[in-house]
Amino acid sequence: MPKALITGIRGQDGAYLAKLLLEKGYEVYGADRRSGDSSNWRLKELGIEKDVKVVYMDLLELTNIMRVIEKIQPDEVYNLAAQSFVGVSFEQPILTAEIDAMGVLKLLEAIRTLKPDTKFYQASTSEMFGKVQEIPQTEKTPFYPRSPYGVAKLFGHWITVNYRESFNIFACSGILFNHESPLRGIEFVTRKITYSLARIKYGLQDKLILGNLDAKRDWGYAPEYVEGMWLMLQQEKPDDYVLATGETHTVREFVEKAAEVAGFSLEWEGEGVDTKGIDRKSGKVIVEVSPEFYRPAEVDILIGNPEKAKKKLGWEPRTKFSQLVEIMMEADLARVTKTAK
Ligand code: NDP
Ligand code: GDR
Image (cartoon, rainbow, N blue to C red; front, side):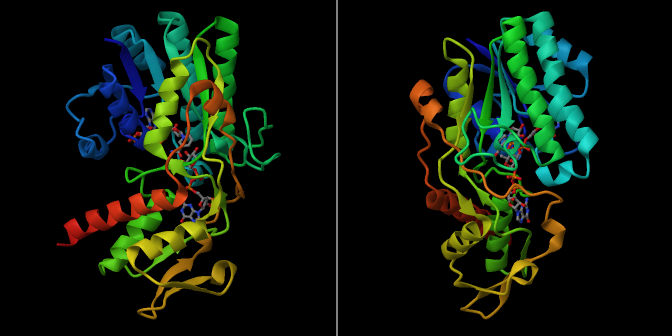
């Protein structure tokens, strides 16, 4: 039975990846940094809470990481743990760098020292492209990160490449574009939209307040992206791959589609921070814009080209933008109805 260690087990991708690996017959260890909230709601929703072996490991502590690697002797390590919220990285840049940059190095050092034949996956990101230099973005597009998160992840990416080239470690960096699901954290824009609209529909909230509606993202469906992570570690040689849909949509389009699924009839008024989204049926303002949710530096557009992953891994995204919004909106409507009852 192969053994996999997943860091960030309590996050969106950790849960879907754990499910996939369990289905493939892996013994799955999930590294949890032991925060105050021990609900493990994502693993519970997927029905795998009892199947994952939880180990306590924080990416900030090298000796902790070393003991875990030594004890488990994993065949594969998927490093999904991160301070993953771009907005917060402007407020906690040092912590973000300690986790998202130095944490990767600590994990690689532990592998190099204790079990160098471990296969390693690093969760890199399209945020490394930042102020984009080329459309669409590929593995060869130059990087220009626009946030402390993007800069820290760029270190994580290059140190992964460096350990592959210097120490012959089977280390892959997956440059993943945004991927969403009903298990997405509520602070990210897609889930914030679907959860808030569900609450507005059932009278639990008045308005959805957002930042930049014009940002464009390449949004895919998370369960498909974790398949790509696994595929990268099953190849003969380690390499880096972009996973994306090749389509881009604005935040505004996401709101419009979600509102339609939730049964609102949305109409826009005004511009910039004065933009309002009005429900024609009730005449109520249900969407507003606030500078509070704008970032000091924005990534205006992301659109990835997943050709290499298609060709070499046989990986292809299947869920289209409108299906993704439907899946997320319907899941939140169902959740909110349950709690509203
Ligand atoms: P989440 O934010 O849902 O999960 C991240 C997890 O990392 C959380 O469970 C968190 O623990 C854990 N974590 C944070 N700090 C530490 C630490 N110091 N030590 C150990 N664990 C820690 O992220 P996603 O699942 O969405 O993403 C997975 C990875 O992929 C992240 O690295 C992210 O940056 C990257 N990525 C994500 C994309 C996406 O669209 N989802 C796209 C590209 C890259 P806790 O639960 O205790 O807070
Ligand atoms: P992102 O995701 O920064 O792309 O990072 P997020 O959903 O936070 O933002 C996407 C875009 O929406 C705009 N936006 C808002 N964002 C949030 N969170 N809240 C708002 O109210 C709001 N209004 C507008 C943002 O400005 C941005 O342009 C995600 C994370 O998962 C990263 O960890 C990952 O690396 C990248 O995706 C790829």
